[in-house]
Amino acid sequence: MVSVHVMEGLPIRSRALPFADRVEIRFGNAFPLALLIDRDAVEELLDAIQSGYAALEKATRRTEEA
Figure 1: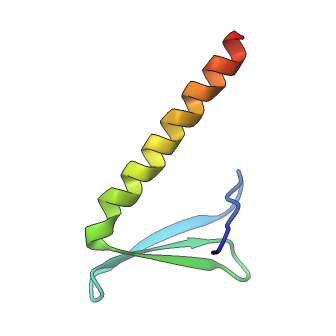
Figure 2: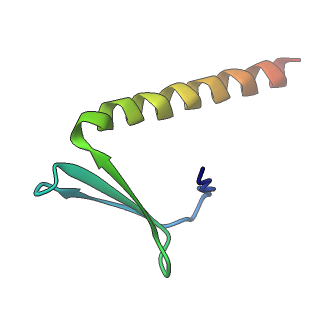
């Protein structure tokens, strides 16, 4: 398992790799981590990020209301 901590200010760049039918997302500068996502998996990744963010927002609101 690989764990990557994405924080505010971390350089994030993306580019399409049409020859490979993928999207590349690079995190960092000097020694970047590259995440390669097949076209068929892009929507699944977006859904996972959106649902995780929604759960985080809901949990944060619940904590603030208590």
